[in-house]
Image 1: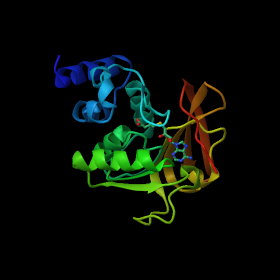
Image 2: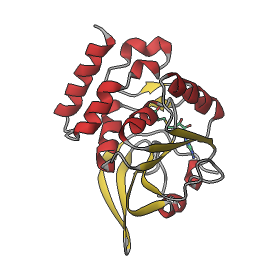
Image 3: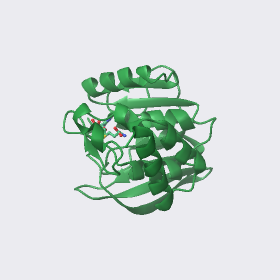
Image 4: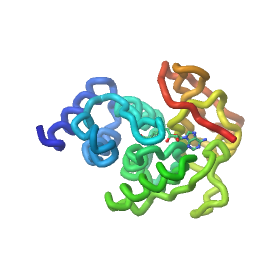
Amino acid sequence: MRFEDQRELLVKDLAKSGITDQRVLAAFSKVPREAYVLPQYADYAYRNQPLPIEHAQTISQPLMIAIMLQYMELQETDTVLEIGTGSGYQSALLAELAQEVCSIERLEELSLKAQGTLREQGYKNIHFRIGDGAQGWQKAFPPFTEFDKIVVSAAASEIPLRLQEQLKEGGILVIPVGQGPYQVLSKVQRKADGFEITQHGGCTFVPLITQ
Ligand code: SAH
């Protein structure tokens, strides 16, 4: 089956699995996942499962990404911070859904490869930094100090304070929290008088490795 047809089947599967945000579904219809997986896994690009990438990391499961993007309530005008660039697949989806995307990856080799793929795919609204994402976006261009939305694609033992601080009032942070193989998907919303934290079911991510 052609990749385009497989992609449409995946989008139908996401819709059946509870993804109702039409902009999120449209982004999945547009971004070719086969460009981000390792060549030997191209035939599996549209299976709704995580796949291995270099350095024992993974490209996340499409449904898990869709759930996180839906919780983020992304707007066209949003400035977004992503922790864990990985393959760059989720960065591309974010770039379709928001105005500017800043993405941090600790492994230089993965970041450089993702930067190349995303450049080939024509994205100009994604900015990269190599380093520890738990420290937030700093010493990097553009010099943003706050974000409308933040998403972490690796499991944190606790919610990094620096990321909470970089959330605008009304902003949303989505992050898997927990130690060990299973974590809880958590949503942090910054209100005028503090942070509201809600939990949204189990998930499995590679660990966030902080300094
Ligand atoms: N959304 C990505 C997921 C990649 S897996 C994709 O679909 O491809 C998570 C990534 O987080 C890995 O590449 C890992 O190297 C990275 N990571 C782990 N700890 C990190 C940290 N402290 N700062 C930045 N990136 C980190």
